[in-house]
Structure formats: C-alpha cells, structure tokens
Length: 105
Image (tube, rainbow, N blue to C red):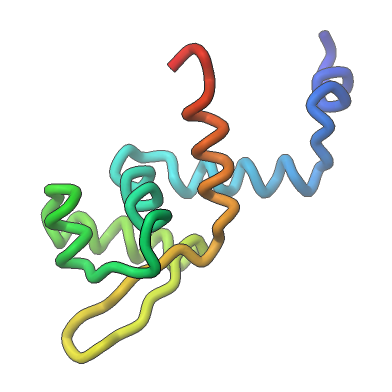
C-alpha cells in the first residue's frame, strides 16, 4: 500500500496529519498523558493537586506542565501562590482516546 492510498483510506488531510503529529509529539511521555487524562476529568487543578494524584515530584511535573503550556496544550492561571492548569486544546483527549482503543495495547 502506498502512502497516498493510506492517506486516502484514513481520510486525513495534511492539516489533520500535522495537528495529530503535533499532539503526539507534545504528549509523548507517560506523565504527560497522565496529566491530560487527569485534567480531562476536571476544569483545573493546582500543581500540588496534580503532583499528589500522579505521585510525581513537583519539580519534574512543573517541567512537563510548562512545556505543554508553551505548546498550547494547557493553559494556566495563578491564584496567590498556586498555579492552576487546565486543558486548552481539548482535541488532545480525542487523540489519546483513539490510541487507547487500539487493539494492540
């Protein structure tokens, strides 16, 4: 099967392929996928809440959160000393759900 046929079979435009590739690259780490999964179920969570729920050190978690925010996947708001993160690009959930439904996983 050629690339052209595979693309036609999946009905993916160049724009869709680029967006999916961007999402996959940006979330390609178990901690980042866990962050998306956690934030998909709530409006927003503080760094401390995310750290506690995922059992990840805040320094490492902050690195992941900052990178995902810079890429536009997450947004954040500051309330006093706390920073709250939420999903900005909701399409990330769709991509992860599609992958979770794969039969080989």
